[in-house]
Length: 319
Image 1 (cartoon, rainbow, N blue to C red):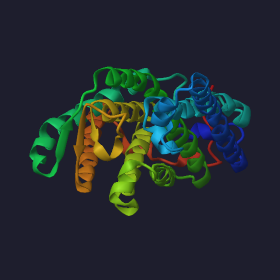
Image 2 (image 1 turned 180 degrees about the horizontal axis):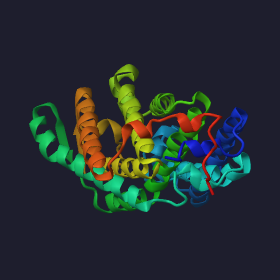
Image 3 (image 1 turned 30 degrees about the horizontal axis):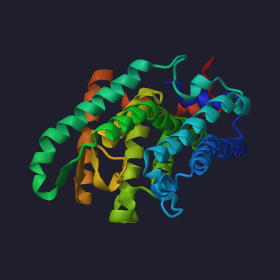
């Protein structure tokens, strides 16, 4: 288990972490800003005011991000932030970039696709078995808008691996390693980043519909399960695959109405009470954990051992 222990190599002053996050956030805005300015310039040049109103509403950017061009702009932010974090990491921390992803010296693609597969199986089983049992509490709507749907699905398939990769690289990679090094505890690193991940989603649809203190624990729990899988699998490839499959299925196949929009929506939207969200996350997580533990033979006690984070233990090679 080298993923967290490798964080001891290189330079790790807390100001470097703050600087990396600030610089990454600033760089992330540049491509999206250029893209939005180009869209506005194009509509102004053609004098297409109707298209401008449809895209930007009455100057409300929330309306814009509910459109396909707005979805692309949002994805460009994550793509640029992931790229900035990846390329600046070695410059700031003097450590090999791959140590930010894996406890090994290579990207374990098998773990990524295993995460996607296991989540798809667990989520699919819940939808096939659980949703019919809860049908009296759920309003299900099937909506298909041919060309628009296929265009959005194709764009989502291209961008979502980078969007989820950005979140995993920052939360389950960069920040979990940093907090583990600071606290000398993987448990504390898991707790802190799970809460941070949950708070990052405080502007999502369910928060507005159900209330902050009702819905935010769902996102914290999602952060917890992704962080737990990162610790147990010694890297972020597995949670990255799970996260990617979750977002892809929820945005294109079946997802909550509170998460969707008028212009960007899955084939099937379910209007569900908040307690169904809790059941979904708990059941799907339990199925994934049991399947993965049996498949990968995890030693939980060894995975949570903090001895490698102590200063009196030589850091492992992380070339």
